[in-house]
Image 1 (cartoon, rainbow, N blue to C red):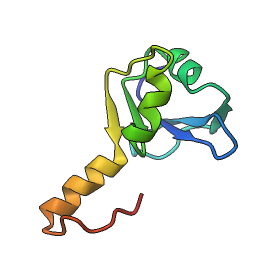
Image 2 (cartoon, rainbow, N blue to C red; image 1 turned 180 degrees about the horizontal axis):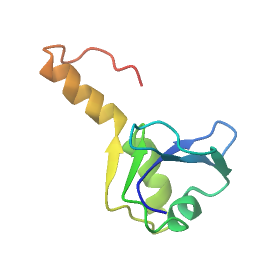
Image 3 (cartoon, rainbow, N blue to C red; image 1 turned 30 degrees about the horizontal axis):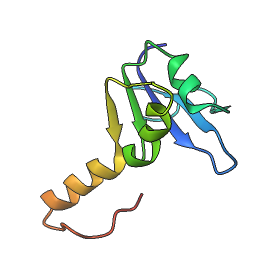
Length: 94
């Protein structure tokens, strides 16, 4: 399993994961996994993880010893883009 995968904490617990296509859209079914660490650990070939907030997701992984080499943090990216547009400090959509 290579490429980019999205991971999002689910309100009912666990996480939702889905492979992303080159266009950034889901490329297959969304899978609900009970254990965030196992969701990442079971996909060692993922090139980059995409999630809303590293501050929200990464502590769940670190608590079980799982580390991720590369990720896109949507909140951080949006903050940088807002700043570039001269809109620093405005609320993010995520």
